[in-house]
Image (cartoon, rainbow, N blue to C red; front, top):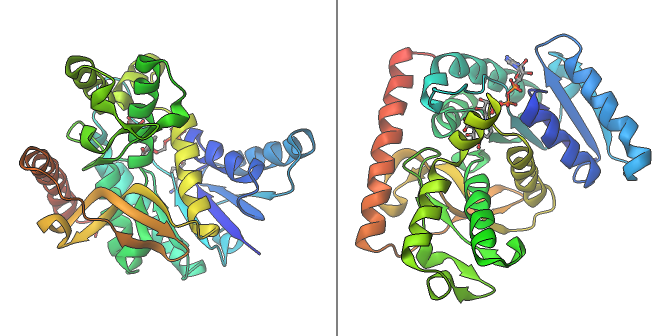
Amino acid sequence: MTKVTVVGAGNVGATCADVLAYKEIAEEVVLIDIKDGIAEGKALDIWQKAPIDVYDSRTVGSTNDYAKTAGSDVVVITSGLPRKPGMTRDDLIETNAGIVKSVTENVVKHSPNAIIIVVSNPLDVMTYQAHITSKLPRTKVIGMAGILDTARYRAFLAEALNVSPKEIQAILMGGHGDTMVPLPRYTTVGGIPVTELIDSEKLDAIIERTKFGGGELVKLMGTSAWYAPGSAAAQMVEAIIKNQRRVFPVCIKLDGEYGIDDCYLGVPVILGRNGVEKVIELDLNDAEKQLLEVSRSHVKEVMDVLDKIGSN
Ligand SMILES: NC(=O)c1ccc[n+]([C@@H]2O[C@H](COP(=O)([O-])OP(=O)(O)OC[C@H]3O[C@@H](n4cnc5c(N)ncnc54)[C@H](O)[C@@H]3O)[C@@H](O)[C@H]2O)c1
Ligand SMILES: O=C(O)C[C@H](O)C(=O)O
């Protein structure tokens, strides 16, 4: 039986569990939260939607009882504080590092073979936290951000070009923050290079909007986004459970790829049953390399903060 656990039954976690259930990505979806009753309630609500939306994935909720998560194939960690207007993702580090650490310990105790997908922010550094706590191979502890950031970029492009978002293919690299690196050279619209369809001024504006896409939503809603993030995490789960070998930007510890060691960054990978099956190394030009270096150095600074906090 395929089993997926989602830790954190808040906005992102519940949305992810809902997508996993209605798309029948896993036979059993376990939702778990520290807050009394919330995971049980949301899991029951999703289960009661099954006859309406016609799916048979079973959803189960639990208040911090990790025995219910035992034997999960994939675990998605969404537990942690979201930011409020005026905050950066990095401001969440202290609280969320402690949460991600204790959650990861419980996860690996009950599901030692699970692939872990981290969603909590600051994303790249929380992936670092989960990786060192779990002691699993780097290919099995990965972060979700690139699918979301690329989706924002693709949605903005679809709007500007007045085409279906389905037609936009794109890749984006780097950390999940203002230093992310959208790559116009690797962006196509139905196979046509995007640069042939849009002028550079408009494209630059879309890239800037993408970089601050999370903040735009925080400003509007007073908390961060959940529909696209929840779906993005579920899409990663699907690629793993169904061994789809899809090409996605995913956060992983780099071990020499792109000339970078010991840093957690978004890069294109092939995602399949074993987690990251392969890191794809693009032949970046000098300008792209420079942008990636800015992003690497920022993420490294935040990794150093985590080392100092000492929750490792
Ligand atoms: N990677 C991304 O692209 C991305 C996108 C959106 C949100 N996020 C991040 O995801 C996290 C969750 O966002 P949200 O909007 O769902 O927040 P939320 O407040 O709606 O939900 C978080 C949930 O985590 C639970 N929680 C806290 N500590 C826990 C613990 N020790 N064990 C189990 N559950 C615990 C809370 O009770 C709460 O229900 C935030 O850190 C946010 O910044 C990341
Ligand atoms: O912006 C945030 O704080 C949440 C998330 O990282 C996002 O990009 O939506």
